[in-house]
Length: 141
Image 1: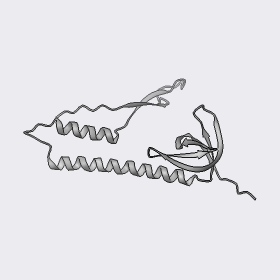
Image 2: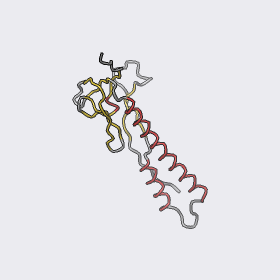
Image 3: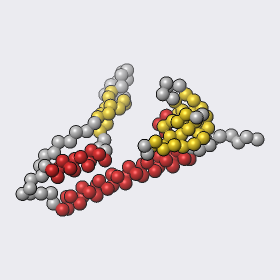
């Protein structure tokens, strides 16, 4: 049975090994299969199967195990990101704001917005991918 899978392609910039001029970086597609995509693929497969030749129990159990593994991996990634953000409490960091300017300050707290951690610096929330540098906060004497 053939099942069509649509994936979203996000261009990623990286230098081309064949381009000796290095003047313009090549665009390489990055393909990812999210939990939602995997579940949609599974539902499509089950609804499109031949009733006279259904998916075997072993195949179905294998697919459910893959789904469970994907879900556990995503949960673990969220937990690790939260631990990383929490470890920054009290640290001095440099962040890049939405306007492209940098701001430096101590991390005063950590927020979780839709499962993603954000650090609060000088009263403003920043995603972890906006952090440019981290330095040890000097104790006041």
